[in-house]
Length: 259
Image (cartoon, rainbow, N blue to C red; front, side, top):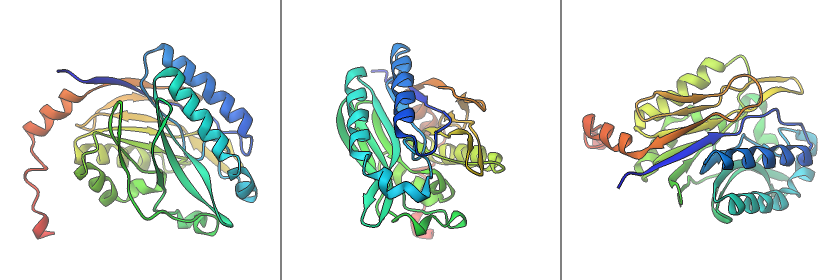
């Protein structure tokens, strides 16, 4: 039986610290995507508020209500929604991706690799475990932004049966080519689908270029966002992934004992 879903990236200019405005944008975007038959929508990293460091603990207190709204939207539209939010953790917060599947919390993942260049460890507590979740659209593996630079995490998710990698990000200029190349590599080397959502526009001193990507198991770009608010979408045909893995059986040919 053929399996195919439609996935989208919800790319937008996150308003720093303005939870209400960001939630309203997502409400509208999800409603539009539902009318187009989208079943999986991926939101950016810290999409409710951005990296508003001074106010993060305070903003994190509203995360339970934001997750509740994600659940309501996913139930109303029969959709899987994924995006990261600040999760309260003592005096710090965790950068946590929440997976809402038709109203059900299917799992959450705390960002493991904190970006030392921006001193994220001063404000965030890092996670210590990976996540692959069974959902109505398939098995999803999750990582967040800087995690992209660590191929061993993506490989672990693939070995645990992930069919789609979802990547909420806030990846700024000037490292656009790194974003594109690393995303294609993670999809290509693991022979699976990948949906990555970046934000766009200026936040504080950082300028974000968008370029959200949906990528196929051969590394082919199925949909791409520009530099403005947009919702690129594409169909993911799982038979393509299965056939490609048969043609080039990388997983069968692995020699873990040698490395």
